[in-house]
Every structure is written in structure tokens, then in C-alpha cells.
Length: 114
Image (tube, rainbow, N blue to C red; front, side, top):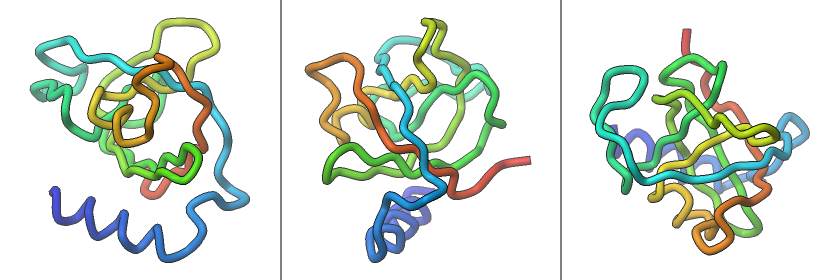
């Protein structure tokens, strides 16, 4: 799985990561929890995210400034009005969003799970 995500990231960075079908959303991050809503063990250093409605397994390309990361939806949230994504600590670090707690990111669906 890690090789697949790394390959997808490498391919996505060959072209502009932010395209017309990307949209800007407010994201926060979290580092606690034992089990995610899809039943998997939570890894705060992983590259995952929580979304209220996207199907589990959906793959997203997230961009913040010059930094991009690919994450997989495996949890539900955030539960604070106005926020669309909760990132794992690892994903937030990769995007440079740790210090601020929240950040505006460009979100593009790479693969919508069924």
C-alpha cells in the first residue's frame, strides 16, 4: 500500500497538483484514537484523513502551498462546523499544518471508493 501511495504521489507531482477540479477546504488534524470508524487501527503518523461523507478508502491529493500529500479516508469527522477534513498528524506534518492547527488546503479526489 505504501508503494502504491508513493507511486501515485510521484505521478501526481509530475503535473500541476492543483487543477480545476480541486477545491479549497479547511482542514484540521488529530493525533489520538485507537480505532478508526472503518475498524482499522489509528496510526497518528500515517497519511490518512477523516471526512463526514466520502466513502472509506477514497484517495485524495492534498496541497498546501508547495507541499502535497496523498491520503486515504478511513475515519469520520471533523465534527467542528466549517471544517471538511481531519488529517492524521503525519499528513498535517507533511503539509506544514501542525503549528496552526488548521489550514486551507486544495483537495482533489484521485480515486473515489465504492
